[in-house]
Picture 1: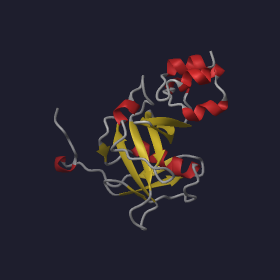
Picture 2: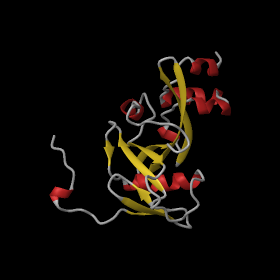
Picture 3: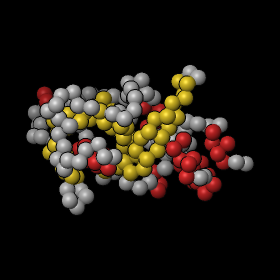
Length: 193
């Protein structure tokens, strides 16, 4: 059976077992049409796209899968394409067996003011927007540099909690000034179970 035809019948999600069986038969041109959960052999970052079906309309969403110290992310460039995270099925995408599989979705957006370089939004696997993620911020900085969105070594980034400053070091590492830590209970968000 032709693998391309087989995969086109299931345009949304593939788990890593299906990918491992099929990857030897795929051509390079097939990869942009797939959404894969490929954690077992995923490099630091992998460019992938998914085809979203809304009604009869099929739309492609390009993203990069990245990880930082064990946290893995789906990074979406919201500057170069239309994407609304509030209507996206993030819980389905975050599923490690039937979706992309991620801890958080990171969204790169245009800044809301000229005082910063980018806006950085973070969404947990359940779809809730959160304020900060240090490992995500490092992946965010590497993403915008690797995609040619900036040539700066020190990037001013707007988050829900304020401005952070990731720095791209000459050795390829990224550091982030996350601001002063908060220790008083009234400043730390906590939702009792």
